[in-house]
Length: 219
Ligand SMILES: [Zn+2]
Ligand SMILES: [Zn+2]
Image 1 (cartoon, rainbow, N blue to C red):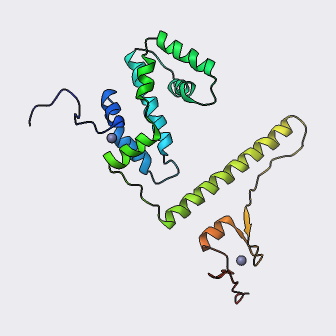
Image 2: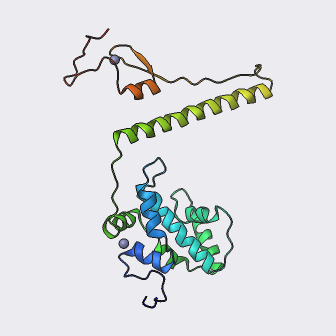
Image 3: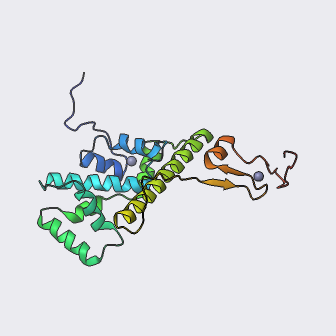
């Protein structure tokens, strides 16, 4: 084996995102970006979310280098204070001043922040990552999961609300179950399906054809 260079995984940097990865020693950055971006589940990151992810790691690297202790969530909150449109300019100035006092070169750091376009270009051009289009089955599965989570949440919120009213003696009930039933009704034929049924069967039995005409041969 030839001797190693001092920099880990040294290679010519491709663009701003590549340079940031090297400069801040984020050796797993490319791998993570591709993984998060091409994730074929609901957890997939958009390029905007990936830019936030990169920028928070930049900030974290800067905190660590300056020896500033940070608690869980503090990096994300600081990043929000620096960049979010909803944060007043007064709060932003104060945040920047505090960071400077702590020894951070905040201007340099902000210059290193990457945009979602940069992340996209880095993924596509430098890493040649491709977003695979999900199959129909994957889409159905995703939709099932999404709606399932919504039902669970509706049920939990309902149970909480009722329990709270009961605790305050506003409503009286013994043990109870919450049943969440979501149905879809076809306005053409009036047939009603649970969401699960509809997703499983892939459409209504009346099957409007391509011309929008109804096929009433069934039922
Ligand atoms: Zn690049
Ligand atoms: Zn129908």
